[in-house]
Amino acid sequence: MPKRRKVYDLSLPWSRNMPTYAMSLSFYNPPMIGSYSEFGKSILEKNMDRTVGAHFYDSVLSFYSHTGTHFDSPIHCNLDSWSIDQVPLDRLWGEGVVVSIPKGELEEIGPEDLDNAEPEIQRGDIVVVNTGWHENYVGPIDNWDKAVYYARMNPGVTREGAEWIIDKGIRTFMVDYIGVDHPKYTERGDNTWPVHRGLLSANIPMVQILAGQIDEVTGKRCTICAPPVNWVGGDAFPVRVLAMVEEEA
Image 1 (cartoon, rainbow, N blue to C red):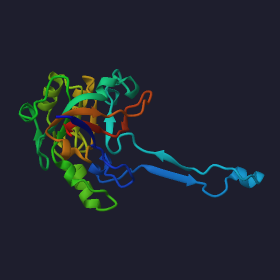
Image 2 (spheres, one colour):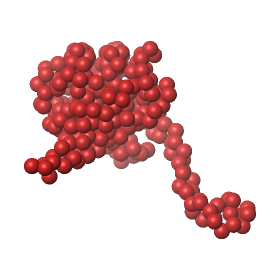
Image 3 (cartoon, one colour):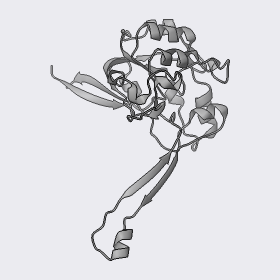
Image 4 (spheres, rainbow, N blue to C red):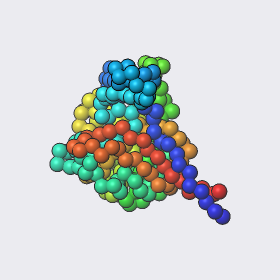
């Protein structure tokens, strides 16, 4: 039977109404978005009284590089590792799997969870983990308290889980919550960050804060695409994650 390729968006809508990692510490650092437009006569027209002119909408952005659905390059935790422009392209686009590992408030993702994931995680995969935590996402403009809860109480990967990911030779690791490490390892715990440090030191990039249509591709093998801009020396950058699945026509 013929098949068709369907593309799914696993990204968070990018706007000022996004929880950011800083909200785990109860403050907010949204992107600054400035815009300007000239849909009447341009300054050139007004100065020269000409009738031909351009009509544009333009924006100026200023934001923390780890905002929204974003890609972490290894240099984020290891200055001797790849920056964004140095990450091999096969870490940004290739075969992978989206697995369901349901976890609730402050629950742990360990080796047993990864071993038992379906479809089976294979050596060299790009791996997307759907814990279901993305369902708690809400913008801080809409509901501050719930957005702080989303940023503070997420599940996370354990130290042993990180070792499993490294030993398995995973190419890129992605999750549907705000920071890969379990909160007990962050500044809210012992501040050791073994998952960030371990994966990135092993040159395994990470993508965090997935959402969108992730549930629609969970349990499937697919082609995953997540290239950030080719930023020289970059540590992280917002990214639009796409998953392409072959389905019956």
